[in-house]
Image (cartoon, rainbow, N blue to C red; front, side, top):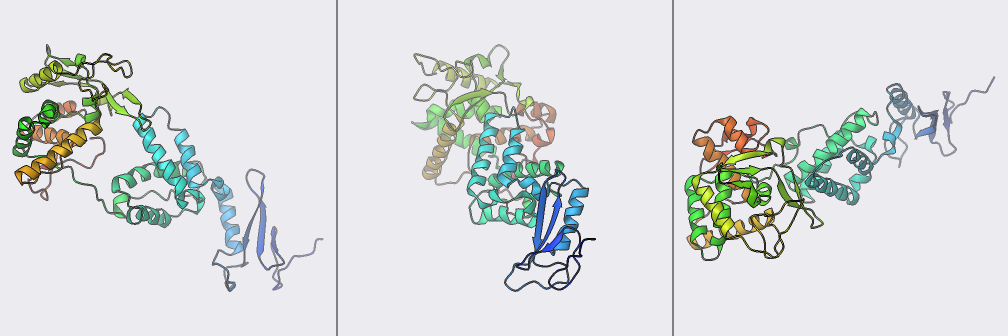
Length: 398
C-alpha cells in the first residue's frame, strides 16, 4: 500500500495533490483532451492564511472544485488559451461575405487590440467588471468617441458569445448595455427647419463660388438619399420619362484608395425615388453641365457617374461633407447667425422629418428612405431640441 502523502503541517493530501519544496501546493490532473495539467496555490484550504508577500488567490482545493465543475460542464481549460485578440481574429474568420466598409471596421478593432494590453489577456480571465473598466478607459483616457466604442463592443460581444457557445468560457463578460457605463457623447441628429433649409439653399445658390454645388445639395435635401447612394448615381439612373431615380448601388472608397460599388446598405435600399419637378430640373442642369472627360471612369462595370472631381474620378461622401462644412462656416460668418451642423446625413434626416410632418404615409416614406424597418422611419418628438425638430430613434441603419 502506498504511503499517505502529507503537507508540511502533516495534513493528508488527496489524490493528485502535492506540496513543493518552496511550500506551494500543486494539483495535477488530466483534462478532457488527455493533456496533463496543473494548478497551483500557496494555500491548501480556504481557512489557510495568505502567506505574507504573496498575492491573494484561491486555495488549491477551491481550484480543484473549479476544475471538476469545468470538466463536468465541458468548459475548456484556460479558455482554450485564447487571448482576446486571438478570439476576435477567430470570430472574424467566420464573417464571410461582409461589405468592404464592414471589413474596414473589423481591421480597426484588430489594430486596436494589437496595441492595447487588453488584447493580450486570456479570455477566461476577463470578468464583467474588467470589460466595463476597459471600455470606460477607452473613452476617458484614450479619447474614443461613443460611436467608436459602440463599434468595438459590437465586435467583442459576439466574439465572446461565440467563446461561451463553444464552452471556452462560462459567461460572456460583454453582455451589458453600453449606455449604462459610458457617456453617449454622440452629437444629436438635428434636422433643419424648413426656414433654415431654404435660407441655406438660397445662400448656396447666390454665392459666387459655392453655387456650383447648389443642384447637388438641393437634390440631397429633396430626395433623402444616403450620400453613398447619391455618389453612386449614373446618368442612366435618372429616368425623366417615369420621373424617378433608380437607386441600386452605393459608391465608396476603401482605406487603400480603391473605388468600389456595392449594393445599398439594406436590401430595402434598392428602390425607385420619385422626383418632383424641381428635382428633375436640378438633375437636368447637373447632366448638362457635367464635366467632360477623355475617358469615363469605370467602377465595378458602371460608367457615367454624375459628379466628377478635378481628377476625373467620381466624387465621394468626404467631398460633399467638406463642401457643406465650408458653406456653413462662411454662411455663419457672413450672416452672423448660427446654423446646426449640416452634413449629407442631415439632409437625409431633414427630408424624412419634413415628409413625416407633411403627412406622407409612413410605409411610403419607409420605402423612399430605404429603411428595412418602419420604426426607423417614424420620427419621435424631442423637446430638448431648440427648433423643435424631430429626432430619429437611435438606429445606426439610417
